[in-house]
Length: 424
Image (cartoon, rainbow, N blue to C red):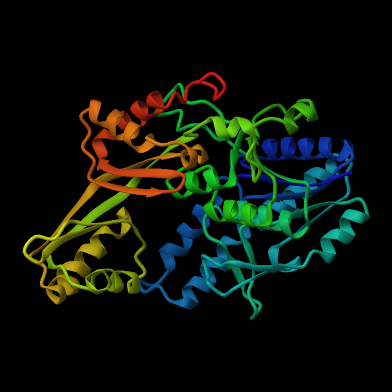
């Protein structure tokens, strides 16, 4: 008998019919002899609806007091889901019990709307499992040291499920979603994109951080840190599919690098449209200039991604970096009003219509010429590279947004990602 954690997204919980199907699927796993903990999201659209109501009433200024109430409101969506699923499981003839995060408890810090899990007390859950019950726990939420309800940020149910699986040393955590696994890139951009049967945590972490929206990045970090085998698979397969077939479907995210993984130099192409570039032209090229520019940006709680500093000419240099497009206007205002004058910059320029395209693969560690192959493929399509960022297992380029899909298709073809690694 193995302990298995299932996580179901909002679309899987979107109606009573779908909740019945989830219950039937979970019941199948129970009858196969497994102990089951289930972490469902709120019904699709429910969290947005609740926060929309709050926005209509909220004051203009975002305060910690407001953030506390937003968490109290947002957390109710998952509480409805766990209760409904527990009832559906009881209708299947199974003993089941639902818990909110504070009842487990899932202990977090006090960072409302983006709290981090600090510990999970699993005594109550283990006692229920030992008594033969299916335990249904809210995702996305916990409780802080003062007893306030907190939420983990959007997509936080993934993190909750992985954290529970880690705390309870589950055999595997299955993330049921509306896609049937992790693909070499977005099939909507490249129809030839191929589903990967396995991917390493390192590769998935890069894919998640670079724009792949399949898993919340913190859930991948958790899984990698605690070595929780994680599988992404579709909740839209028939619930009565053979359990052995289901258990081997989707994409397994693993900490083990097998021989087939090493054969694939590049595993996937990630991209992110939500980028903007800002540049300070003609700043003095002197020690400490990077801190003078980036320090105030960091203090304004603006995340910085790719950074590049040009070669100095006559003691002056140009300094560019990218930010999330939502932070573009605020960053430009900060640079033009404060940082530019303080650094004696000749000019502040910006471009909100750029994107980042990246190749990812653990095979890049042991193969030379991968980046040059990427640059050649882009050059042959007439795509100009504005910025470059590299790590051990990824190379990212910043390009004009209008060339994004062309770049992704060209790179997918250049690295033979439409073929199995064994045939590439």
